[in-house]
Structures are given as C-alpha cells and as structure tokens.
Amino acid sequence: MPEPGKASHLNDQPIQPPRRTRFIDIVDGVIRAGRKTGMVDPARLERDYLLEEAAIATGLQDYGDGWFEKPFDVLLDSVKTEARLNAAGDFSAMKMFHHVLRDRLYTQMWFKRHPEILARPLKNPVVIVGPMRSGTTRLHRLLAADQRFAHLRSFETISPVPRPDFERVMNGEAEDFRPKLASRILKVARLANPRTLSIHPTGAYEPEEELGLVAASMYGMKWEAQWRVPSYAAWCHNESAVPAYQHMANLLRLIGWSQQESSLRPWILKTPQHMLDLPALLEVFPDARLIFTHRDPKQVVGSAASLAWNQTIIYSDHNDAVRTGREWLGKTAEMIDRMRQARDSIPRDRMIDVQYEDMEQDWRGTMERVYAFLGLDMQPAMAGMQNYLDRSARLKRNPHRYSLEEFGLNEAEVNERFADYTETYGIPVEDRRTTARRRFAR
Image (tube, rainbow, N blue to C red):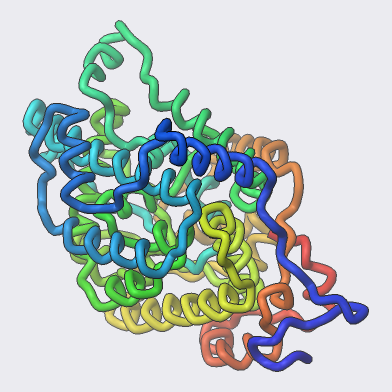
C-alpha cells in the first residue's frame, strides 16, 4: 500500500482524478479577453462594494441581522489569499455573492410586507444528519415523497427568496421565474462539469437540502466545497452557528409561506453541515427528530474528496489531488468527531441510526424502522417513494466513479483513522476486494 499522502499506481501509472471540461477553459479565456478589452469588469471582492451593488440593484438597504458580515469578511479574505481563483472563478464568485446579498435584501422586504411569515411555527422537523455521501440524499428524497412532510425543492435552495412581484404569482397572474432560473443554472453546471449529474442527480423540482439557506449567512460548507478556503473553514469551526441557523429557520418560514404550505406539516431537512453544528441546530429547532446515517468511511472520504475536487477544478487552475484528499479526510474526521460529541447530550428517543448498507440491501425494511421511530404508518407513502426511486434511476444516467488512490489515500489509513467510529456504530467496513468491486458505487 502507498504511504499516506502518496498516490498509488496501477501498472506503474498514477491514478489521476478527472480534469475539468473544455467548456470552463473557453469561458475562462473569454472572460480574460473581455477584461483586457474593457468589455468585462474586473472582479472586486470587497465587502462594501458588494453590499452597495446589491443595494443599488434592488433599491433596498436592510440586510437584516448584521452577523453575516463577520463570516463574509473572513470568506472574502480567504478567497483572495488562498483560493487562487481563475477568471471564471472570481467572475462567478461576484455573481454568487450578489445573488446571496440581493436575496437577503428581498428577505427583509417580505418580512416587512408580511410580518405573519415570522410567526409561522416550525414544529417537530425531521433532520437527517450524516457525513457527505452517506446516503442522506436518498433518505431525504424518500421521506420527501410523503405528502405528510414539507420539503425544499432544488429551485428554492438555489433561489430561496421570491421576487418582489411574487404576490401576482400567488394570485395566478404571473409565473414564478425561479424554476426556470434554476434549470438554466443546472444546465450550465452540467456543461461546466458533466459529472455533476452522477455525483448529485437533481432537477429544478427535485427535493433538495438546505445548504443554500445556511450559506445565505455567508457561513458553512457550501463555500468550502467549491473553493479552497482553509482559513475561513478554521474560523467557522470556532464560531457559533446559531445566527446562521436562525436565518435559515426564517427562510424556511418564508419558503413555506410562498409554497402556501400548511405550517402543520413537519419539514424534512438534511445537509452535512448539521454534523458540524448540531448544538446550533438544536438550539433553533429544540424539538427536532434526528436520523443519523452511517457508511464505511472509505466510501465517504473518497466520494467527498471527489465531490470537492470536481467543484474546485472549475474555479481554480491550482488544484492538488493529494492535498484535496488530505483536507477531506480531515474534514470528515472533524464532522464525525463533532457529531459524536454533540449527540451524547441528546435523549435516545429523539434519534435513530441508519446504515447505508441496510438501505442498499433492504430499503423497505429500513424505512419501516424509520417510520416506526417517527410514529407513522409507512403505507400511505409507499407509492410516492417508489415513484422517487423510478425517477432517480432515470436521473442517474452514469454511476459516480471515485477512489481513495486518486487522492493520495489508502484503505489502511482510513480504516485506522475511523476504527473507533465504525466499531461504536457497527458500520460494515469493506475489504480491498469488495471495495474494488464497488468503485462505481454512489
């Protein structure tokens, strides 16, 4: 086996992760050329400038709780000093920040127009908590197929805040533009990286996680998964996430109102961010019911590194596969350690553990356990869940291929790093031969 941090070889050839598409090279070149000719403005990743631009664009001034400026400052500094973005990267960063800031302004506008939004209860949410790539998406979408629960759709995590004329949409006088916008963004994402669809199959109306709602406070793993920003990640590690989760909760209230959704339906939530911030989650949602997912860490680490790699190669020309492997090995360990510490104080009847392998081998039996935990009859949801599984098979055209080796890691190292975790939670651990057969597993 290779030493930690050294890439292994197959027939004396190093196993290499995929490179980015020509589409990004072309876009990057066009932006560079446009800047030389003055047709494209240079990137200005400065807080005051970005705040002013969003205010001018919307005609609004109120950003709500100013806590978000703290992580925003750290993130901007980390992007400028560590991420080494290419032209396409800093151009897209400007667009992303403008989008988030504009939405914060519109959020406060809606709360002033309709103060009853903030009075909407968020009772007994069901929160799926697990490492990246541990089967959380499948479990989330199976539960979202049950009409007794409320859930986010992909276009709502991309654009959670309705535009100022949304009342006309609610009255049937206009069409909500956000699903079309989401479809366009997803098409561009697939051009930028066709592997996106196999890594995380989705569509504008597919159930989606709330990571974008956490990122609305300029906080969280969304930014870490697309740019290399270690100083920002370290800052987040030492900061209370309660303000970000409070804003997320208010966005859920706004989305529920815009969906004209009954406030009696519990939300189904999930994002790997919750692994890091369970105390904040439980402070904001004190009656949450928790479903913890577990998977062989070798699969989790390899898949998470692949996901991050396929994002960061879009935005930077200076990526290192071994460094990516090291960072996401450490990030996965941090997520698991913080989850384990936090759950020690949670009453046992508030949580249940679900193994990835159990879902693979017997999803119905595993879901019956989940429904028993939730105190619900599963039968009314069966048709919806089967429909999701059929739709998922159509969405996922190609399996997600990844390995530890392409990121300079090896099985023995990962097994040793997470031995106590796998033993404590009874997680099935694959051997090398089984892993080789499963390299195409999601």
